[in-house]
Length: 102
Length: 97
Image (cartoon, rainbow over all chains, first blue to last red; front, side, top):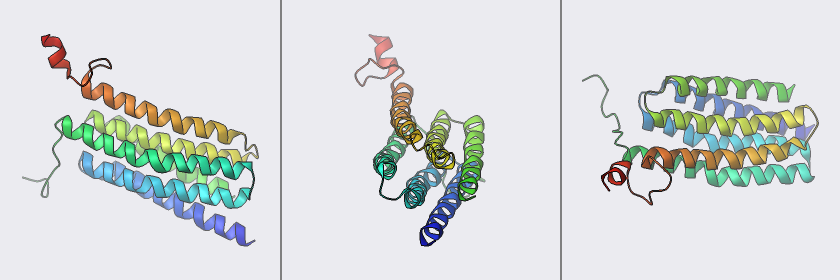
């Protein structure tokens, strides 16, 4: 029962974070703010989802695989965000400053 | 029940990311949206593995995570340099030679 509640809490929190990231990705005004919304929520969202599933799996091979997926996403998600921002700077995308109504 | 809620939330996020990938004014917006789409797809496969009780599907989620990262970095390198074999030169420098 306790594990059920912990799973629910983790999965619902992860879902909320994911949807917040999606809304930010959809509504923010320029590339860097969109990348900020996606990049910061991605890792924690994945962590909460995989932790919630891990509570259901217990100490089995499945939870080890979940840990492997988490370890990989933990390192690659910030790396991908960084290289995206780097490529955009090199590609000449300027951040939008001020209110955007000039 | 719990897996259904999680899967629906992921599907909503996928729809928002897909909208950005289709609308995105620059190519970098599209790549960022596809990167987010890929990460959420990994989570969707993991949730589906538990929903259907076949935890072998987690292997597919793991492979998808690997492919997603390598794909995004490869596409970024292609966009940055114009092709894969120029050793850091831009497309214009290669065309001048």
